[in-house]
Length: 223
Image (spheres, rainbow, N blue to C red):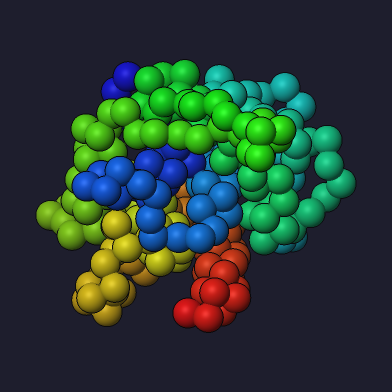
C-alpha cells in the first residue's frame, strides 16, 4: 500500500502515533480529529456541500470507493440535517473504528482481540508499519515548512496540517513551533478550501469544532 493512497482521516489517525514509543499520543479527541478529516475530504471531493451551515449530500448515488468515507456519507444521507460542527462529534467513534479496521486489513496495524474483565469483547491495535507513519509525517512537515508556497500545496496535504494544528497534534506542530508556524497554518487552512468560498467556510467550521473539542478535553483533564 502506498501512503499516497491513504485517505485524509487515515492520515490524521496515523499522525497521532509516536513511532518511537509505538503508542498513540498527542490528542485525547482523536475520534473527533479523524471525523473532521473524513468530513473535509468528502467536502473537498464535492460529495458534501454547505447548505447555510448544514452538511448536505450532493447526490444520492455518488461514492468515493473508500469504505470509511462512504460509510460516513451514508450516515449523513440517512440522518436529519445537521450542522458541520455537530457531525465532527456525531458517530465519530464509528468512523475511527472503521479507519482502524481498514488500516489493519491493509497490514499497517495489527488487531488483537481480547475480552475486558473476561466478558466484554475489545480490540487493541499495534502499529506494524512504522515506515508508513514516517512517510505521512514527513509529507505533513514538508507542507508545513515549505519549500512550496501554501498556494501550491495540495488541498489534501494542506488540510492534514490545518486539522492537525487545530487539534494541537504535536507530532505535526510541536508546541514550541506553534507561534513560528501560525501564519503558515492560516495559509494552509485557506488552501484546504481553495476550490470554492463555500469549501473554505466548511474547512474553517470543521477546524473550529476540532479546536473546541480539544479545548474541552484539555479542560476536563485539568490541562
